[in-house]
Image (cartoon, rainbow, N blue to C red; front, side, top):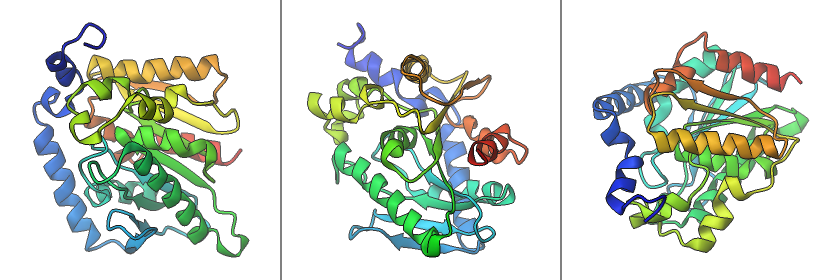
Length: 271
């Protein structure tokens, strides 16, 4: 039992695919478009930052010294790949950002601490790649779902100026009691160490939180509770609930060329 919910109820409370009837169609369209773009976009694919096949990133340059967006994908730490999300790259390029799509070890091949370490290491390697010769290129992290959790975990110690966390998980305790844990294998200690809502809030780093108004109630609560925690601890950043967006259509905040998200990031980087 967790929050008076049975395992079955908790499984449903965090099953985004089941909650959105056409989620398979949406994701299949992402993957198809992304595969086509990987054959046409100018960039470097599968740049290693470790010895494992998971530990690599794709890099798509804009102009020299353009700010770099590092995108960390979701899939509750056990599904999907960086390549599945290449469909967002053209929108970021058109708004003046270079883009690094960061991969990481998936469960059960790695525990949550290993996955967090991958993202931290990957961000550092990307920083070294783009900031050779004292270029001083600013970095910004964007993460969706599990990726939002991961950027929230590494932001304070990273070279990035800030981040945008979309539809994330910030308290891992319910994950320990639902189907996600079949592969992730969380225990009490790993939940405590790897939940952003338990970590020190840095007032030097901006973290904006976004969630869809049509998402599952527990997903909305995750973002609301984390925002309250950050406010209580004087964290810097904005909270935005996007009405009529679910866990998948929330990507409209990136794939609309005139999205306020881009203005928000440029403004934060110009500080």
